[in-house]
Length: 339
Image (cartoon, rainbow, N blue to C red; front, side, top):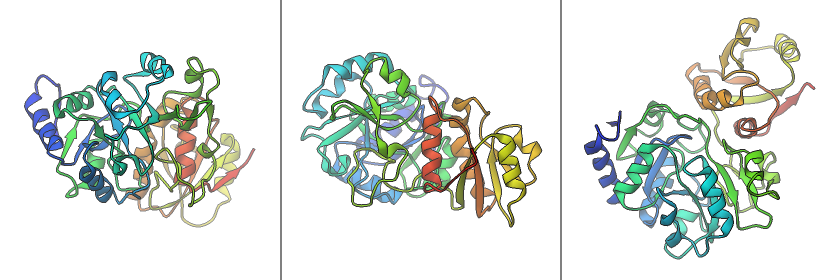
C-alpha cells in the first residue's frame, strides 16, 4: 500500500507505483470518480491481467486514461473538432470520450472493438502516475467484476488484496460514480453511461447529443457494447436489490406491509421513520451526495449480511441519472413503481 498525502511529499512512493505500471504490473489508483485498476493500456498482457484480476468479461472494453490532450493523438485515427470543445470545458474531469482507435491500442484493451474510450482524470495523483509511468493507463474500477465500485482504498483491499501488485491510497473519491461515457463515433453523438458530466452540460457543447436507450434499458447478451456498464449486471451487492420509486410517504407505507427479513436503502434522516435495518445514501434532492455515498451503502448491505434490500429512488435529473442508472443495474432492473 502506498499512502499519498501530497504529491511533493510522497513522490518516492508515487515513483515506485509508476515503475510497477511501466513494467506491466497492476496498481489500484485513486481518481475523482472511483478507484481504478490501472495497467499499461498499450500492453496486451497487462490488459489481460486486468480482466483476470477482476474476473471481468473480456468483451467489456477498458477506459484509457491520459494526463494531457496531446497524449491522445497516437491512440486514435482522428480527433474531431468536437473533442477539443469537450476537452476545453470538461477535462480534466469525469468524462470519457469514445473515438476510432489506432493500431497502437491492442484489442485486449478495447474489448475487441475498433474504438477506444479515453478520459483525462482530474485527480492529481492519477495524472501524476500516468506522467511518471510514461504510458496511458487502462483503468476500469478496482473491484471484482459486478460488485459495487470502490470509492476508497479499503474497498480495493477488500476486493483485490493478493490480486494486484500495489494499491495507492489517495483518500476518498470526490464524485463517487464512474465517468460519463460519450461516443463521437455516432452521429449525432450519444451518451452510453451517465455520470457527473450531465446531459444538460454536454448539450451546451453538443446541442444534438442524446441518451442511448441502453442507459435505462436492458441490453441483450448477444449485443456488443461500446461502453463499460451497459451489458452486464453491475455495481451489485450479494443481496437481492429491488428499487422502489415514489414519494417517502408511499415508500413508508410500502415498507410497513412487507413481510420477512430485509433491509432498506433510503435517504439521510428517513431511517428514523422506518422500522427496518436502514442504510442511508445521501440526501433527498441532492443527487451529488447520493452519488458520493451510493457504492459505500451498497457495500454496507453485504457487511450487514442482508439478503434483500428495498432501495428508495427519486427523480433522476442531472447526476441523479447516473445514480438511477447504477441502481437499475445493481437491481438487475427489478423495480416497483408506487407513483
